[in-house]
Every structure is written in C-alpha cells, then in structure tokens.
Length: 124
Image (cartoon, rainbow, N blue to C red; front, side, top):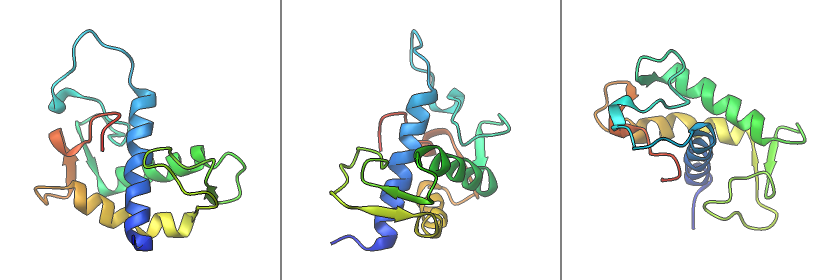
C-alpha cells in the first residue's frame, strides 16, 4: 500500500508530465533532452532549480484545482495513474511531497533538474 508521501510524489510527477505534455507543441522531430523546454524551467536556462520546480508545481496544482477549494479530488487528479473513486489530495499534502519528488528526479544531486532528469512529456 502506498504511503501518503509516495502518493503525493506519484501525483506530482503525473501532474508535472501532464503539464509538460499540455505545453508541448507538435514538432517534426523530438529534441534532445538538453534542448527540450520544460515548464519547470522558468528562466529558460535548460535546468530547473528547487525554487523553479516548487513554483511550477504549485501553479500546476492551482490549475488542476478546478473548483478552487485547495483539494484535488478524483475528477481533478491526473488520470495516470488512475485515481481511485473518492481519492483526494490537499495542497498541504501535495506540497509536503514536492521536495522528495525533486530530489528523486535530481539523479546527479546537483540541486537542479536538467537534461534527462526532465521526464519526457507523457512519460513518468
């Protein structure tokens, strides 16, 4: 059984990928990871700091929270992985898992997400 923190990380990653997929336009050929613009890279330097990641994820939570109540409910949650009926994720729960999510993605532990550390849109 998943712990709340694991669930928050999984949902954060799914929301992040969904956001990246929504912001990606069709291109004739896939760009190498180092050239791919990721929505978490707010300043365009091809990497995302913890602050950029936290802001992008917070903005994404707000975008997903259609009724503005500070809780993502089943219908508002990304559909991959499929949410269970009645599943909810409060903003505080979501935010509590962000640092672990960032650290998990930061494979080389340099404090930034860059290159292949950015999941491709539509993939986990």
